[in-house]
Amino acid sequence: MKESIFVTLQKCTVFEGFTPEEIREALSMVSYRMVELAARETYVLAGMPCRYADIIVEGEMIARMSGLSGKQAQIDRLGESMLIAPAYIFAHNNEMPVSVETSKKTTLLRMRPSELKLLIDTDERIRWNFIQHLSRIDIFLSQKMRMLSLFSVKEKVAQYLIKMATEQQS
Image 1 (cartoon, rainbow, N blue to C red):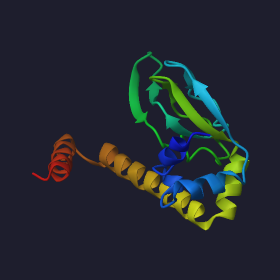
Image 2 (cartoon, one colour; image 1 turned 90 degrees about the horizontal axis):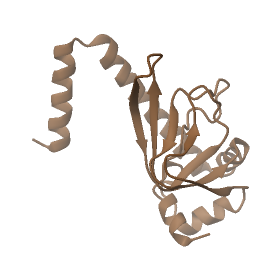
Image 3 (spheres, rainbow, N blue to C red; image 1 turned 90 degrees about the vertical axis):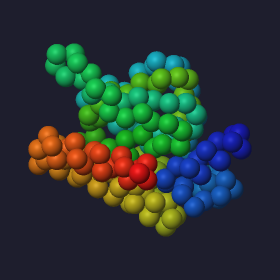
Image 4 (tube, rainbow, N blue to C red; image 1 turned 135 degrees about the vertical axis):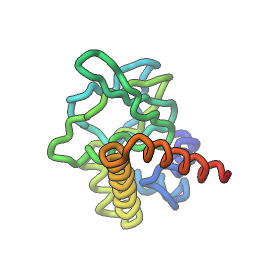
């Protein structure tokens, strides 16, 4: 496998704090494969199960939610080093809430959930990184729910402006 893949994987939250050599060593204990997808290829449709623990090592994917009217909203843009749908990998109801397709040629490092579980069970740093990643997702979703359901329009605009000012340090 190309050395650049291990450098990319260093940016993945699961391997945070790892050197490329430590990532290579950790992955040598599990079964995985590289999967290539063409541009504009469907990765998963909403309602389908999350079957794999996939990490984007090259390329980009777009997650979209569709309404009954056919209207679509882009939910997220997934780039290199991102673990796809981490909260659904081990869920009992692992049906994807969004459809995901590639925006350009994309390469994935693909493991079965059982292989990711083996990594989590054998390396405490990977376990902690995965738990922290899931916790960040939970915090993000809680903040979104609060914003969408409890704030008035004026409060939403004010919150957005405060967030942008903080990010831009202005």
